[in-house]
Length: 499
Image (cartoon, rainbow, N blue to C red; front, side, top):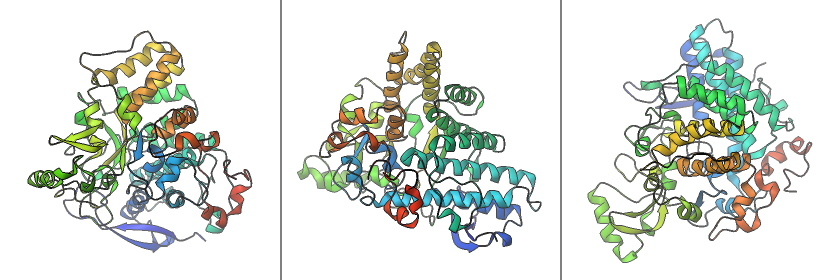
């Protein structure tokens, strides 16, 4: 008997811009569902909602905790909850509850995606077009879940069929390499099923190019440089996505799904379960600002006159090293580093491109900003990396210089770099181009330089640069999961070196 699954049944609102405006969550048996195209689409919508919880892409303590903190890019502005163990590199199996939430919610998406695939593929009650799109979306979102699981924990339980819960509960860990390769094959299939572009109410849904982008990320982890170069060249040459003329245009709050954006999660203010609070992590809080405390009331009055507030948590700020190292003549610098506002010096430096002080249209805890997770700037940098590793230095220069062309005036192209020098240049360019919006910690792990990078970084009040050890490139599996499933330690009783 097929197990019951959670399906998010969605009620669509007339004239709304998002396909996830409102939802009612219920438990639905698969044999009573999937009887129409609309029901299959609702099931796919449930997968997107699973990726938009507080432990994944909705909240400030979600996936971003593991992609940004503990690197050379971002840090908490103060000792706060479970973030300290990550910044201090003294993680244990029990001292950071977010790890369990991330694990649980990612596997929730995987389990539901498996059920969607089992019930949609070959279902004669559904049109072929709906089958194709829903299958493509399920493959994409399942791959995205495995992407994060393997990046954070390495070897993890792996299943791609609709298993009963008692069987899932005793699965051991599978090697990360074969999991990633299987996801590459799934994403190749998804590319052939998904549309080339989405507009209107379908903004925020997966496309062929989003699947190809994610496939490239897996290729890079697998060091399949040829596969990564082929995929990125296809995106650059054949997709509707283009680099925008200026860096600042990429982060226009009134045009977030612009030509450069390939995929992101589209949120809507005042829509139940469809606003986000990631922005609050980057927005300053007035109690910290401005630097001269006696000017606070005056500063607050000027903000109010503009319809603005410093009402965030003021938590996610650039690491001192990012501030110090960011080239002074780089045109991207002011979009990444904000240390003065309305003529007032600020106590902390904030990530400009991730802030929104408009409390009317973007109030605390109810933000409608999209979270763009894939864009063309990263595609060019991935192409440069793949070309360089293949010894194609001229191609690598072409791709990285496309990024630098809008970063400097006059231009500062790279020419004649050795493979080693180009590798370092690409790593640095990723830092300047994608600060606070990509996966810096994942990349440092993938490049094999996380430990040395952290050791050489200025961690301020945190001790990660002193405490980090080689095994800490992976996180320990949470104790809550081990208690539920001791088989998780069968292949590695050390739990990634933490025992």
